[in-house]
Image (cartoon, rainbow, N blue to C red; front, side):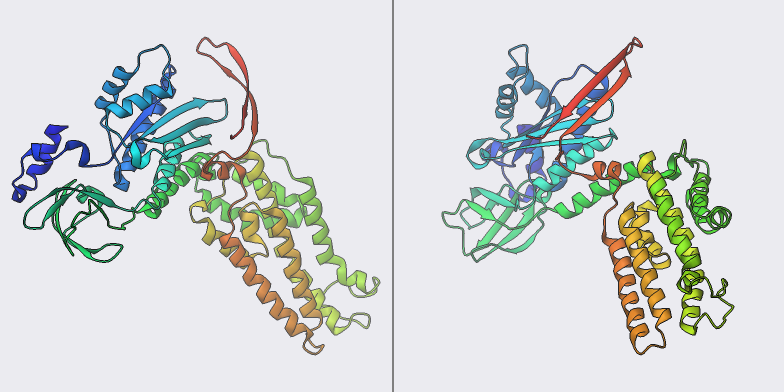
Length: 492
């Protein structure tokens, strides 16, 4: 430690200080990251990967410097006296390392999920009240370190940069135990309570400063600077999302050697309309096979709704005239009023929307049941807004919200039909058209802002495990012996 400090101070040559002038324990706040021992090689690797990512996250936040790996091993060897590693072992090791905080990570596996428990504990008068535990899970092992790192980044919310005055000089200047690593640079800072601090020179962990008014007997300076928590969390979320889309995305699973986006558009615009013309409703399900779903089964209630809606489009005007009006919208007779003919034309003209919604509904069902994500999911908010722009409720179906999608579809078609029928009836038709525009705008905005309803995706993006889950499964050991398992997960 003293050798490291000598190197740091030598980078600030104008200070002309000797290493023994500075108390090494006061130069920077520290954290030690421990892992609970595991015998499974895969869990050992996950433990180490998680620990390294957490250490990197602490470094990026610039508040607590992680202890080096070899020093952690030394401290554990000095503290571990029994057969079982206990919390006291980690606490004693952290004390040997002079750490202000220590983190303990424990990982485990079930047939479906990887789990991690992370505890953070404070030591000393300043941080002894810190005691927090996180429990996370993921079906994608490489997301475990990222989700733990995200919690560490969020832990730094509200931890402003503060520094201790560790040495004073006769000319009014003084040294503080914060520098470039904490995000400081030469310049003048306003500090809470009034006054300013001017940093004359900054090293990695210590800085030369002077203040106005002079610090007097004050031993502590609060700069009020916050770490970039939002930026750190955004970067981690993006990495989690990339891993999740790579694991569940249609383009990386069922359509590996094909252009998933191209086939998705072809299925919607070409394959589905043709299938529905031959078999209304069921043709929408058949069209989904173009995306290579395995062992796919249709959603019967969804088919029933789409077929019923198709029959309304096709036969409502004829039924409204008691079957006397001409079946075709372009033919008008004495039993079909001008208003009824406008409605007839509107309903037949919007049949392609029915075909599209039937297809989107069956796709949403298959994405849920087969656990795949649709193409364009990296830009899902923009894509959902566009789908709602061209298809009533299309963006809601795209994100898996089937009921909401049908609600938007029926609302928009009903308002459009009412507007067409009453267009010459005072202002009713115009008011209905205006209401349709408002609903369409709400549809687009809602589709853009709402989150996906795919539970497998939400599980990866979630933070703490917040619900009780029961899992059963069977796996094979290295000796090819079948093992049945059951696990119950419950937060407490």
